[in-house]
Length: 253
Ligand code: PEP
Image 1 (cartoon, rainbow, N blue to C red):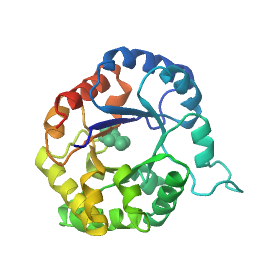
Image 2: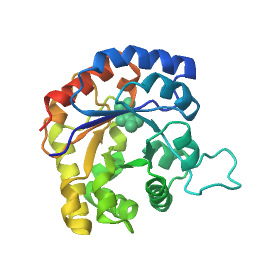
Image 3: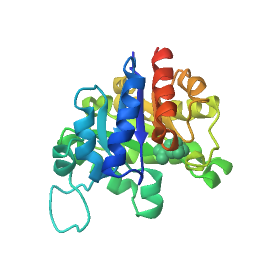
Image 4: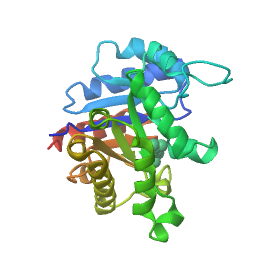
């Protein structure tokens, strides 16, 4: 059985003081959560967020990191830095990083290896653009991205990490994939993992992300292949994020 996992991606929103206030608003609403939960905050918020999350089971995450342990990479953060600041998980290869910051399959692969080496849980994002979906390229695109990200890992590493299927056309647009579309593509991704690592595929958690909210979460989370959600906009609203986390508990299977 895979325990459902709901991770918030705050993107470039909330200062440290605002982060503390948001966490204080969310925690009482999810105190009975039956699923795993994480908040992936801006790096400068990690310290304040760690203090607030200290007595809860909610994981703290970052949204990016460099693959090198240290060096002349102005403006970048290493795995050791985000870990010491309080992160235990990290989003890698988000489509906004691929689109605006030249992230590639190759850099996602290097970052995934570095995160695992430092004991961080990677949340590796894959997903097709609108044009790719319309031209029937969804399966080949997510297959290529998944293969590239997982190449060279052990099956033990793959069974413990998290993949987020995030169709680019659904992120921040209000256009959500249908329950069936999301379930089908996550099935494709699980098939790739089965092909590469056989039994690990049954343990790897694969989330859906893209305009998931308090109203559509229950339907998506009841699909057999969908092990949780990566939540952008709705993770910034305490009641909405809590509703999704609590829906995941109900649909735990
Ligand atoms: C995301 O950025 O990972 C995301 C899923 O955003 P949203 O929920 O706002 O579409």
